[in-house]
Every structure is written in C-alpha cells, then in structure tokens.
Image: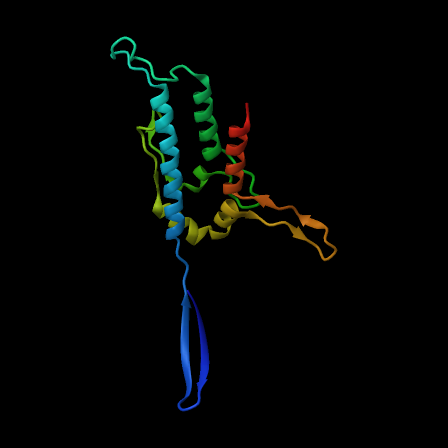
Length: 178
C-alpha cells in the first residue's frame, strides 16, 4: 500500500512521526458480485416455480400459475442476455462478464447451464488476478469511462457508462416495456 509520513511539532519533546498506511481491499467487490449471483438465482428460482410442470402430480396440480406463459421465458432470456451479454465500455479491452472469467458456470451438453439447479459461483482467484493484472480494464468495465473535454469545453472523448449502469438501464427498459 501507500505510506504517508507526517511530522508534528510538540513543544516539550520536539517532533513526533505519524504513519498512515493506505491499502486497497478487493473484498467489497467480491461481496457485491456474490449478491449479483444470489439475486440472479432468486429470480431464476421464482421463474422456475411459476412455470413448473409436474406430469406426475394429481390432476389440477400439474401446472404452476404461469406454466407455458411466454412472458417469463422472455424475462429469463432478457436477464441472461443482460448479465452475460456484451457491453461497449470504450477501450477497456473487456466486453462481458464472461470474458473476465469471474463466474464459474456449470456446463450441460457443452453449453453454459444457467438453470436454477446448476449454480454458478464467483471465481475469487480470477477476480484477484484481474485486479492484479487488468485493474485498469476492470475499473473501466465496471465503472465506465468519463467524458473528456478540451480547454474550450469541447468533448474530445465521449463518456461511456460502465457495466452496472448499462445493466440497470437494460433491466429498467425491460420492466418498462409493455
């Protein structure tokens, strides 16, 4: 971490040195990404419960409330695309969460299994590696790129929203659509 040293004068004994060590902690990012995974699976589980069909259940109990409803299939697909789709975040070198390799996703028949039963997990090692080796790219991907203006106030580099803002906008648009 960075170290700042300061000296303060004390009338009776001269100077006293104080040290302040500043270090970076990535644990907050881990916790927030874990929350994203948990929220994703809570929604997927709710969709699965609302659309379930059990052929072995007694008549009248085979179908759930929204079995066969295309709206929830659309919601599922939109959420998967929103979370795992590509994002334009300038020259970050990163276009998607999956490109960062932060999530371990189970495979089924050679493809990602995103069902509620097949839980993806956070790869903390990949996140630590990304912070160590690709910190600038990671920050640009999640936080975006600020707009740059010249001394006359003309935009020289347009700002680009990060993953979080773009994901929120996709979900808001989905919720606002008819």
